[in-house]
Length: 182
Image (cartoon, rainbow, N blue to C red):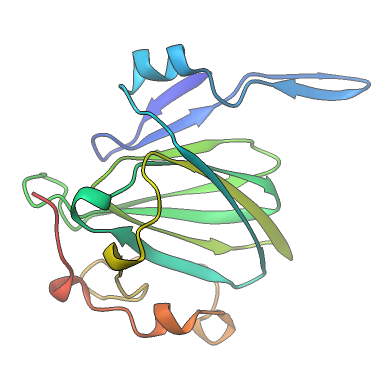
């Protein structure tokens, strides 16, 4: 696998080596020893999967305090724009974001460490999105930041009137009212 450090420290794009032949393809999606050598000692405890239609925007989500989560995300079917927003107050990139396109075609993965808000937008007719987390979900620690907050300034490539949001994401707080990490 090829590990590419993004412009925000700790956030990685991972490109697998894909072996194609007449039968299809084979690739390794996670190799603990290699992951730890490149990124660090992250112990994943749960895998999650979602299926979403075009225009679904999930995020920007995070869990507060001791319940924060690191994520390793990828797309099994379709195409998404995936976004990580730095909520670490001591970081030189605090309040900045990095975005990547993940798809079943490019087979890329995106590693987002603790201390970030995360979201994705479905760009294809539908997408199956999967991710590993290093901490279990804790509803009492759940938090969301508005996807369209001007202080962050994320460019979402789907017109706002075509976006499909959950009620939770419609009621998310602004970046200035979010709870940050040290």
